[in-house]
Length: 334
Image (cartoon, rainbow, N blue to C red; front, top):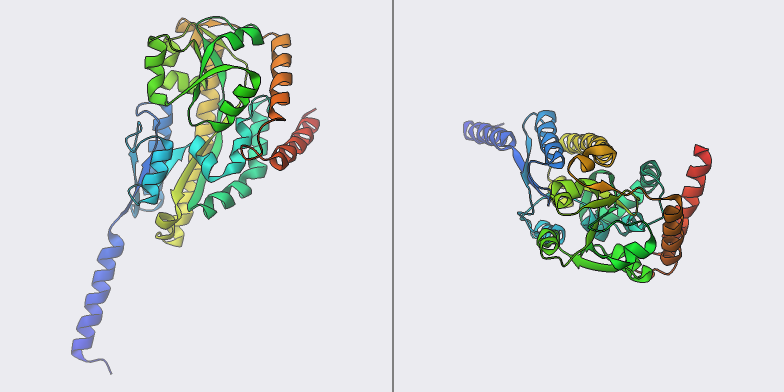
């Protein structure tokens, strides 16, 4: 028999539980993406989708423009519980090493190829992320690097003469560039503009959309739209923050992440097409279309270099596995 005192305790506990469950859970996401960019607009759309799908139980707060540090510093902040998730690219390859295969220049011939291989690797990537403390919410190709320069690049010799920037966090490109004999200068993202102004760089190996977002395209004179290495964009959240959500809200978060990834892919694809199809030229850049000879020489040289990449950078077994998939994908597209 429940006493009057017991009933009062039960009513209090139920009321307290109701108030606690009604309080929204705020997830702090960080990214180096500049606020105001097309990337940032999609990130904010993801936040709105999460709040709507969870009826306000879960909210997403974004820290844009590297406020939480660069990508690797952001991961450390997540591990310390200062941030809950991130929209990241190269750092995702530290957590899921299989993603590094996409940074091998000359391996993929098109964005659809990269997308199809990513679909086959997704479960492996999700497992690698989970082992390292993260849940995968969304992943799509960011795009492919091209060459932006102050002198036209019409041959591999032209490329080798120029001091080209690569992201200092890009272990794979740095390794391949050394094997190719390129004069690359690894720098953090926030030092690129100054290095261009001070003529310490002759050009960039970068995504077209990144060159636009960071305004590097205003500091060079030419662009050569020869797709090099592909970069994946990842939306991740710590297992600790994810596991604290209800099963229903976890499903909503994953659904919002998948929706954001699909939109992000469309935005990047559309922006790449617009930039390479005329927007860069309207900004004053001169297009140097790669000749078939340059494209063939680049693929041959980079694939030979890829064969010599050290095992810890991108394991040979992974390279061979992806090579088999690419043969299948290309055969099916004929």
